Length: 183
Image (cartoon, rainbow, N blue to C red; front, top):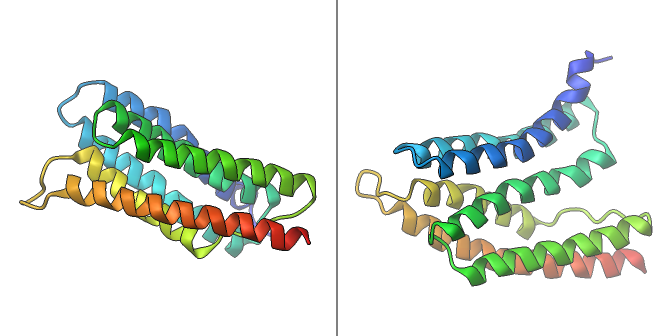
């Protein structure tokens, strides 16, 4: 039997991602000269919890339906919070934000229907790649200034567009997965 803290650690990490989002937004809104850097580091640390919570849940044998449902929700709170702030800072395009939001709302609806039918649709590779690219691109856009001559804002911007494409593909995969599982 594992220590009680090991049982709770994966969910605590998942929740920490959601809690990090308003902290990051507050730092960005502060106007502090290093706000972008601090926000990027906090975002990257929060993004690491996305990998860590699942790994620990498997290692400690505490995988749960709550964890499977809350993990993508915590991701969305973190990512969409940052993307909406980046929109306000004119660092991303409105159409990009719309496509992310529309896809996430649509998939949330499919997940709700699947849950009502006692179905769980596993995450697909395109969705995992989409999230991984977002978790790299967003800190680049938060920092925004070139780093040793490397235009990291451009890397972040185009990386986020790649994740939009992957987001739409994974949304289609998820929808098809639902219909196949429902049969």
